Length: 250
Image (cartoon, rainbow, N blue to C red):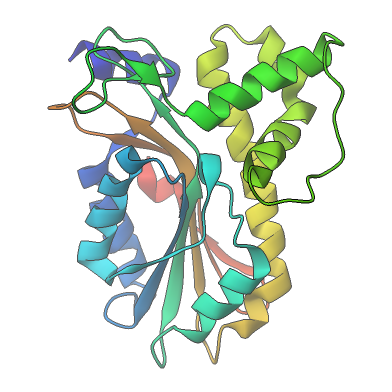
């Protein structure tokens, strides 16, 4: 219970995966989401994040994966267009995206108890590394290099540079470990919406685009994972917002 209390303290409004998925299902039924829906996810590749995908798969079938490190939609415009072309006839898509953060059994934010390991570890590791990169750049100890020419660690470069504009915000935060995913979400939200606006026309007919964005909160074994919803809206294939559904997740 202490872990859930800590989660509510630093991420007020977070919902259990079970409550979240039920509320999402009820909200989207009004827009005929169901058997003709395709689920797309842009969540961090860390194995601890698959539980939410599994819960959503129970509702909408196997997911189309758009995400990479820290949850950024690194598969980009091409993946959105491909996903849109996979929507069942007469159907719509649900795009779920966002970073993640752990809370371990001792209530430490930014840590997690991983299966088979005695000691806790960073969660999200990519986000933690990006935050350290931002500190070094801000302190003048590190220069931002040109984008990498090779793909061997290109995603981490972009996670770090996408976090750089939030350096002052992180430095001023009461709990930096909790602020990092919030800042990363703001960056990811801009990128995801840019992709949607560019490629929304690939959704056929009267198909709709539901966006569910927020922060996954990973907890110790035996405690439910949580999700802090930050965006929940329906758009048409012109990119216009039809309805803001976020109040339904309160």
